[in-house]
Structure formats: C-alpha cells, structure tokens
Image 1 (cartoon, one colour):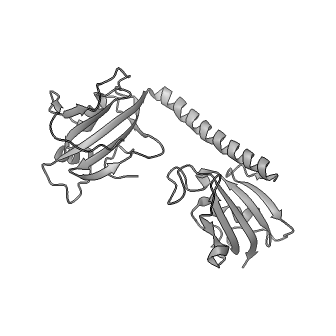
Image 2 (cartoon, rainbow, N blue to C red):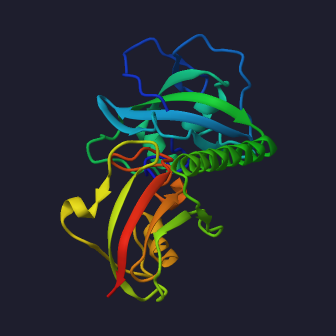
Length: 282
C-alpha cells in the first residue's frame, strides 16, 4: 500500500499547469479538466471509486493510474470541512476529472501525510482526481460481490477451456482453488509439511507464451522446505498434491499466484500454469 495519503490510495496523471484555477470560499484552488457533468455527487457515508495522482512540481509522488482496480474510499458520515482533499472529492460528480492545489502543510497537519525531504514547507501539491463511481454502502457491497463473482467466473472459464483443449482431467482442491493433474503417478510416500523436496518446475501465465520460470533451462532443481511461506503462495501447496517421484500439472488462480498486482512479466490478476517434474523427498 502506498503511504502517501492515509485514506487515499489508487487516479489519472496529468501535468501541472499554471493559472486558470478557481477558488472556493474556503480557499481551495481547483480546475475542472472538462466542463463539470451531472453525475451523481458523493455525500457523507458514501463510497467512491476513483483514481488520482499527487505531484510536487515535476515530481510525481503518487500515481494510481494503471492500477488494476480503482481506489475505494469510504467517506465519513460527516466529512471534515477543514480537510482540503475531502472538500475536493465532495465537489466532484461521477465522471468528473479535476485538478487541485493542496497546501503541503495542511496535508501534513490534517491527514498525517509523511512529507518527503524534497517537498519544502509552504509549497503546494498538485492533486488530480478522476471520480469513477459514487455508491451507497449497500450498493458498494453489491458491487464487491459482483466483482468477486466476475473474477471467479473468469478463472473457471479459463481453467475449463484449458482442460478441454488439453484433454486432461483436473482435480479441484476446494481449499485453494488449485486444479491438478498427475501425469506420472505411482508414488507411495505422501509429501507433507516439514519435508524438504527437490523438483524441476516450469511456470507461465495461462494464455501467454513463454515461461517465467524454468529450472531445467537454469540447470538446477528447485528445493523447498514445505510449511514455510513462498511466493507465489501456490508453491506451498502444489508439492503436497503429489507423492515422492510423481509429476503433475497445476492450474493456479491469481489469488494463489501473484494477486492483483502481478510482478515483472506477469500481469495483474494473471492465472498461472505450473508443471512439476519428478519431485523427490530429500
């Protein structure tokens, strides 16, 4: 989680420009980037979905533009009038984008923001906000459920399509969501936490070409001590679906992989496929 603003975290980056700002009665300087629309405006107790950037001069301190999900902010029932960022959000409506000049001193005093060393006292920060949706708490709970179900249905479809195309029969582990197919069986010794194992492993993003992990190409076996934390989390579980000497293919949902952020070479919300060959208990 980015540490810039305690209650704000994933918006749209646009370069700062001089002049052209209007001012509210409380002194908040603002500029709508397009004519303000008639979208539903937030009020105390609502939940807003938004994106934002914060910049000091030419230095971007925070940018959530490009994050896989919009930032979620629950407004207090009675938003504090002295909080300039809260004022900024409340004067916008759904679909609006606007830029605000916020006193770095005020931000530090009223939100607990940690001032970087290069941001001088008395300086202004440029905050650009794109407000996507405004929801009541009840509507937000429905939104969360629909979003969750859409992601799970995407996983199921991708896994079902792969199984049908490959002709393999996969077993679902309901506790993790991992599906596995043992293509070289015959082992008799179960693999459990506390054991140390070695194995060849390859991994790639389901639906993409190329491996992001291939121990045969690296000329080494992977060694793991089961029961410890590993990244991705699936590494803690996959070996235990096999017995000593066996090999298998594993379909791994994103939440057992690299999650909503991904990592270098792995997109956000990526479902993964791993192949483990000739696992051995050490």
